[in-house]
Length: 364
Image 1 (cartoon, rainbow, N blue to C red):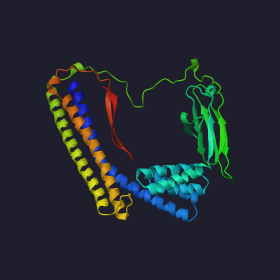
Image 2: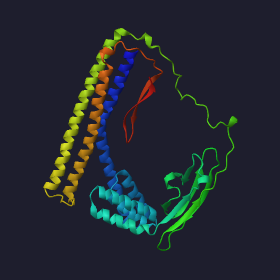
Image 3: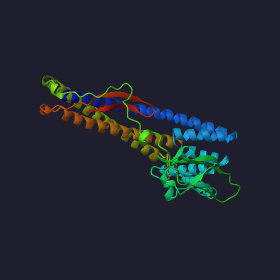
Image 4: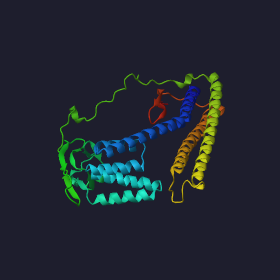
């Protein structure tokens, strides 16, 4: 049984690493598609802005930035939000744009975004959710329009857009408390603060007999009860064959790791070459201002650098797994005692827009 379990683990690890090796190409294709979608949404937003349809334009800019965060999308989103009176949202967008521009060493747009945020800060409306000590029950949660307000923001000024929203306060064993808050649009300059004081919550009656607050745990649908397996029935004659398979898998993972690391080095060199070309050929100056060709080269450099990090990660994982598999399949451990298998391991694939891999569940 010990040999079978080690072989089973080796196969699972190898399959997972093969999925990881395919991941960089999937990520690269997904990144290209995401960038194209973000650019299309941005252009739609600009057209809507020119047509005076500011609310619709804001939705496009927000979607563009969500697909692929960019300084341009955030600046246009902030300007759009200003036009429809959502000053707190505009202030947030400008601050995010300034942070992103500084990261990209774009001082001109970073300064512009910081200046606009500072100007808007003097005109914001604020909400303060006051939670006194005698109201702060254990497990207390504060939600604004269904979104939890972190405890760090209690008793603090929170910039908010004009409009109506609900504040719900709840805690285990207590009745929930709710109130409606209305923030009027600012008629003039200066900031305004609205305060909501949370009262002490009322205790709620027990819903279950005996004061129990938890339902009994049940097995998952289709899952049979765990059954113990006696490891003493392991076939010693098959151990050598299993160990041989494990060693081959270890070598295969090692080869995958070396190939992935080599790919990462190649991509890193390509990234540096693109960056050097952008500056040495005069497409970008020392102030990091680039023409169209320079921007394309810098984008290519960043893409290659990101892919190199992925290859390095896959390579490190494969090499580590190879070492682990080699140790697990060491013939010197053939006399190791068998162990109990509490539940059959289950392996299922995970394929989604943000992840490609395998999930292993169970216990040994």
